[in-house]
Image 1: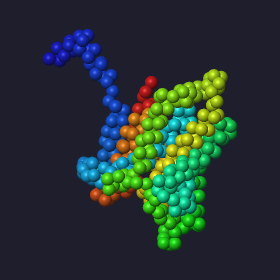
Image 2: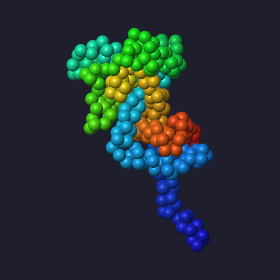
Image 3: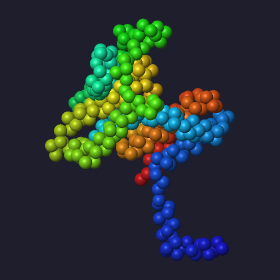
Image 4: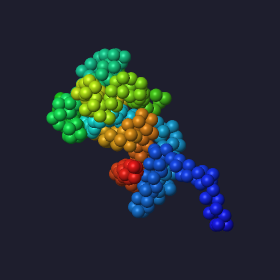
Length: 353
């Protein structure tokens, strides 16, 4: 029998079939998810926990009821927006690590609109808050864009450092002029009026911010694939010096892409304060900007990839909440799982010729 198998393997038809099968690739996102969950199971076993029960609880509490699945979409919303904020300038070869700070500044300026124009009707106030949220994030990303266009400071460093300044500005206002008299023990702004709250759907916390995220993704994909602007951006990302010689205004594209990207992240902040919190709070984001950076990077800046990876990261975040309750596992385990995913992708790219 072994001899027959060996002879069969040397037949050209059989050999070509085997090699073709070996070359078939499982979708990258599926491989990342399966490998990370397997390694995470080993980590749970090492901690004395039951990984099978952990995954069963995840299926029951996240996918087994409408509330759990709706919360998954709630978590996805800011991740979609902050990932697009990273992917857009990445097409120019820029690294925007400032989604977290841009989110905070969008929330801050949107709050200024909600508190300063509370007498407006919703059909005027919500568009105003959206514009202010976009402006807050755009202005926060504009400075790194200008410095990068002038070749003074690398945008990776400037956007990263500004992440730590934006929450301090928010804290100054909620500890100072915007502090609510109703919350003496925990500083936060006054509650927004109903007209300043984004609408939610089907009796859940899924809100209109999800539409902002999907529209941003669709526009991003369309611009990159179907417009002259997208073609020029990809040309700059491929070879900036050649693009300059072809007459493409590279500094202008750098500044505008950073501003638009920051504005998209700012809309994520506006949606969080308007739909989820209903006021400006200090711990507005659990790291959505940093997770958005990782999502865009893992997705290869692909629009569909961003959707898949944002969904995966939303599931991971939900797993952390569930394991705290069912198996007394600290939420920091989520960071371990995200780090595992990152290392898997790094190893995969290292092997790629």
